[in-house]
Image (tube, rainbow, N blue to C red; front, side, top):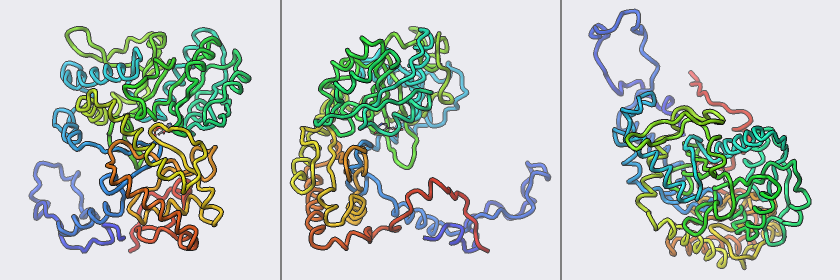
Length: 475
Ligand SMILES: *Cc1c(COP(=O)(O)O)cnc(C)c1O
């Protein structure tokens, strides 16, 4: 597809005023002498251009989006309406507390709701995403031990963990110690006991873990960790599985991040913006980033008076627009948040049972909100998980998360979310079973998929390694 600069026809798409002489309010030296090199198209052509661009993309409004671990649920459009209200969208972050009481009240109320949902005692809304929340949490844990005069260097992380976990711990200067999973896809307690010593600051866990399996021994693990003087970090990316059923406090965690853009239905993908609030137990309250939003009985204010604060981790308030959307979602759902988790778990188990005869299910356990298949059987016919993922794109279906978690060969991680109807789930089953059949009959077909998308196989590392962000028009 051509860029809008290439499409530019030299017609005047817009005329502001006929001659620069008419501009009297500006000093001559500020006026440009040449016309700016802006693309010029008729209004209709501009609309077509952007419609065409958006058609090249895939989104939840276009089709099934079972991208495991990312919780691509429906983002209610009323949230967009609320976030775009003048009084929210046009606030300036430098306004004084007195002038933004409504926005501060919203953030305060959101803090209270998230504290209830997690069972934690104190919270910051600053971090911009889950990974940023992890970093914030690890900084809190680090400072906690520094203040106690303990030089604990290690952080234990299960081998099924999301890559951001070890990255965050490492960025904070910790040594990452992996712990193996057992044959039920859960942390191997005996392996954990072997590596637990007084040098361990914390364990980072996701529960349900990235296999979609609930860690049944979490209470025993938290007891072990706390008896060792270590803390527990909860990666809340999978919170959509447990809302209202349990919470990290009941499981014995000390620090939690939530991904508002996943569990609390704000649009994501393409890199942001998101929000990764971090909630902590009472003993860690004084380490939170400053400021958090407080209430003195009369007015809401930014509280900077936090004794051992790790400092500010994001400019101003974090991604305020995301906070508005998440708060609207929570208010709208109320007690039905529990129902959302219930349906997310039901949908995942339904798909798992329908697909497990056509694809290898390495951990045949009841799952939570997602499950992981292996493409090993299809690989025997020369068709990899990558090939299957690409061919799903020809079926108006977003591929699942692939090759993660790392402990499953040819992994396909499927998370339908609660938003989908049984008919959509059945359509997906039909497509997956059709693919499994075709792999046996015509494996060649898969090697060059996708066939119907605007771009075919792209180099998956080139954009990251050699970003080319500047368009140059060949004249
Ligand atoms: C998405 C995810 C993260 C990182 O969250 P971002 O908001 O993408 O930074 C961390 N852990 C798990 C398990 C995730 O799924």
